[in-house]
Length: 82
Image (spheres, rainbow, N blue to C red):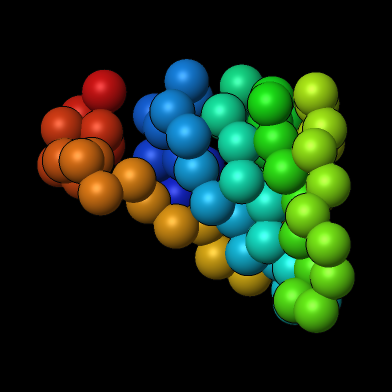
């Protein structure tokens, strides 16, 4: 098992993804694969000093991800067991 299993347990929840080049994506996690490539729906993209843009669907390559902020109501132990 890897960290990807934990991220896959978040599918269906709203997440905040911080990218390596100082931008943030917020949206509902639709799918995640073993390389942490993410598919997000009802998403918004915002550069550090830029405007927020809404997107119906976004695909993020895992190599561009710096952090995935977990939802506040998440029980990590329960998510890992799932």
